[in-house]
Each structure stands twice: as C-alpha cells, then as structure tokens.
Length: 333
Figure 1 (cartoon, helix red, strand yellow):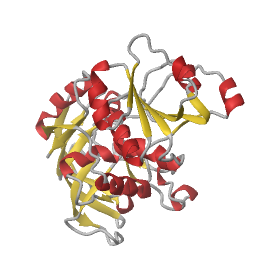
Figure 2 (figure 1 turned 135 degrees about the vertical axis):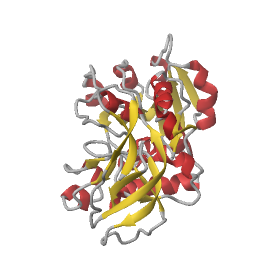
Figure 3 (figure 1 turned 30 degrees about the vertical axis):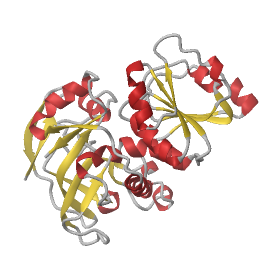
Figure 4 (figure 1 turned 90 degrees about the vertical axis):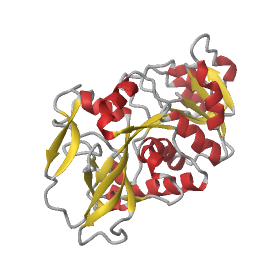
C-alpha cells in the first residue's frame, strides 16, 4: 500500500488517501517520490477543466525520485537510480510514432494523472522508457518542472529547427515562459519577452531576454513589423494574434504551447503572402526529454521555484491559483 494526496471531486481540497498500486509490470519501474512540481495542468485536472478527470484524483506529473523496484524487462535502469517522470508515464512502444522517437504523439500514450495515481504521493509507477535518468548536475529539488514545463518549451526548438541566429519572441513570462527565455538564450537566440506585467522586466532580462515588451497598455506591435523568426506563446488567454503574426518575418511561425481553448480569429492572408505558419505542440518524447535535461545540465538551466512540504499541498495550490508564485511550485516529500 502507498499514500497520496487526492481530490475526491472537481475543485476539491486534497486529502491523504491510501491505495494499492497492484503488481509491478515487467516493463515498469516503481519510483519513490522525492519531489514533485505543481503545474497549472494539475489544477486543470483537479477542477476537471478539460472534462476528462477521474476521481479520486492524485495529481502530480513533474516527479523526481529513485527507483525502488523494477520489472524484468527494464534494461538500462538500476535500483537507487534517480529518474524523472513527466506528463506521460507510458506509451504503446510499437506504433509508428513510438518507433520514430515521437512517443508523445502515440494514440495510446498514458498520462501520469489520468486514470492512475500521480506524483503527489509516496510512490509512482512508470514504463521504464518514460523514467528519464536525471543528470547529476541537476539539483533534484528543482529539476521536476523541467519534465513538463521545461520540455514543453524545449520541444519546439527541436521540432522546428530553431537556429542560434534566429530572433525569437516569448509571450507570457510565467512558469513556462521563464524557462523558454533560459533555453533560447543558451541556444544563442536573440530573445524578446512579451508580458502584461511590467514588473517582470528585470527578471525576464536576468532569465535571458534581450528585449522586453510591456503588453499591459498601449502595446504597439506595428513598429515591430517583420522582426521575429519564431514566437512561442505560453499563455492560455486570447490575444490580438493578427498583430503577433504581423511581426513575424517571412516563413515565421507563431507556436502555441499554452492550453488556449478559445478559437483563434486570424487572417490567412499573411500566411499566403509570406509563408507564415501557426502551430502547436504537446510535451516531448523520452529522447527529447533526455536531450533537454542534458542541455539544461550543461547550461545550468533550472526553474525558479518555491518549495512546500507535501502536507502543505493545499496551501501551495492556493498560492498557484492566485498567481502569486514566481515561477514554479515544488513539493518535497
């Protein structure tokens, strides 16, 4: 038996419950949780904002821990090894997407907190391929958010071949955005941060932004026409997307990693005349997760975090709900 903190109903407070994880699969590892980040996606799952949550729901998908037990077919991993688990903890491993290194696009990908128990707990299970070794240079107390927030903003850099000479914009300087600034700066790009909070300018530049645009009032993007090669949007609220598309250079791309649910009202004309694109992507596959962690370790990239004990999880969630976190929350077990 193991224990975790669960919501019994949509929007409910988390309370400790006890449950049986069942028999360990041949291709699975059992991980003793040391730390687990709290992502806005966990709050969406607690609230059933996406209409797919199952209760009791144990959230948590930015997990750092050590392997306590392993199945017979888990080559390459060892007892006591520190690993991380992100949004997915498994996939079919046999479809065209898994076989081409795109496991995160597998139709049978297994979300860590959907229909199973997540990382706000003593122990979790994961398919061995999705238990990603953590480089020794990355402190485990802060590495958890890299497994979701970090790979979410790193994945587009890989997928769309962002070049060190590119000029890139980041919309929204929060849990995702502050990591995007660090990755893009280390990648070599000239980076522009867009934020509705002018108080974040100093921090944005410390994270790696070369320029800061205050979008709170009188945000005149017209003067930036034809200036950026790539824009990563981390926000989940509607904006004047046509204005952002207009500041892209020919072949530029507006890429969404925020969970924007509202339809986008945009004109196709800029795409027709300058081959501009709009796209989106989910989290990354195990190969991309490993590459991201290696890059983060090499360049000392870590999220700015606030740490809470597991039994203070409701206090931590409330602080995140109220937008008072700079920039990620981590639970310590």
